[in-house]
Length: 265
Image (cartoon, rainbow, N blue to C red; front, side, top):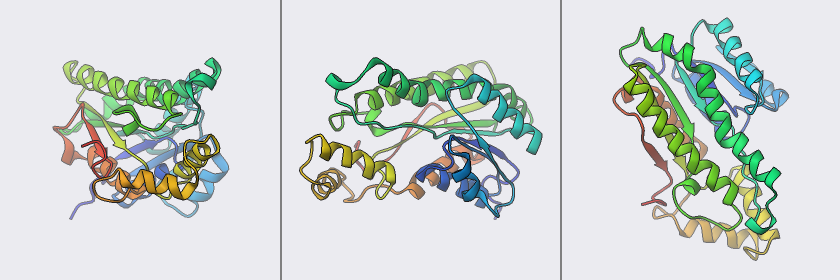
């Protein structure tokens, strides 16, 4: 059976993170060449050591100049770009009363403006690739269940930025479709990712702020909210991303795909 992403080139941001790393691994396994980017270039380089068809590029997703650089680097290395995955993000915990304007703006810059800059910078290359493929090109943005429904206290900046990302994704899907670009744009919507450093850090911060009495109580409370009785894993998220990026999803655009063990049902 042909690999799902055979011959395609993907740009994945946040490639050194818990979820981004697995997305990169799964895409490579499915035959793609990958331009993996992250703010932490050293960590990303270690992750990609020994992996063929992958390059690591240092990247600040809030920088227009950096976006131009990574797209150009990908085209130089692999000659085209079929897929963009906006996975880089930040999840600070801050109650509304304690959130500074600077802090608020920083979260939106990374979680919402970064994907906007990425779509804009990658668009010419994606359009060129889509023109020679019946299934077109694909953009997958990693949103969050926190941007779909009310969650835990202390996540207003994160929830707001991810809710905005969901609507940005849908608007791009309609725009790119109506204009005949043949570029699909979808969101994967994870809830809590069990075992990830991000989730542990987030819950620890909530314990420190008195939201939960202990990390154990926090985990029990979070898990009890999932109908399947467990949280999703980074691999679960990566599998959804690979599907939406593949030609098998050629007629799917403008959707939110929850990977949340039923949390948003």
